[in-house]
Length: 138
Image 1 (tube, rainbow, N blue to C red):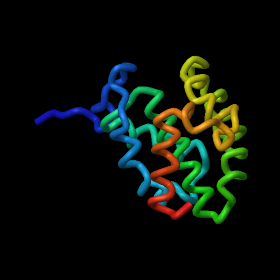
Image 2 (image 1 turned 135 degrees about the vertical axis):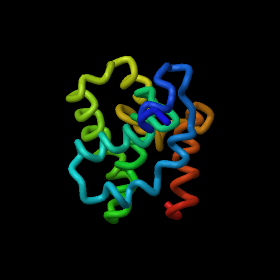
Image 3 (image 1 turned 180 degrees about the vertical axis):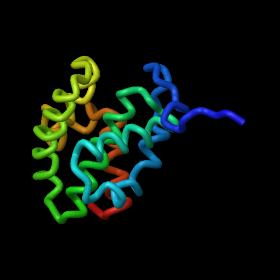
Image 4 (image 1 turned 90 degrees about the vertical axis):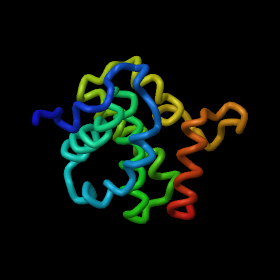
């Protein structure tokens, strides 16, 4: 019986995006915790790609896990947010991730989402904070 590698199972087209990998990814933070950023990214990409392999889904999962990691380290959520604007953005650029895909995360990577009017927040941002609050009481 031949199968496919798990990391090749999820779709890689932009129409294959969804929140399935994001909603299942959080427990991975404990496995990734002490690994260097390149390993954290590679493993996150493989796990996300089981169901959603497009780079947009991978970036969302990677950002989420990087935030959760620093939150577990006891850092302030606003400081984490500012830190990740540099750390995640620079890392994605170092990987030569398509700038169009990076720009889709500009609210997280370039703006101050906590100062954005509630009506203008994207569903992703709202769901991110709701999930953090439910999981960590943030």
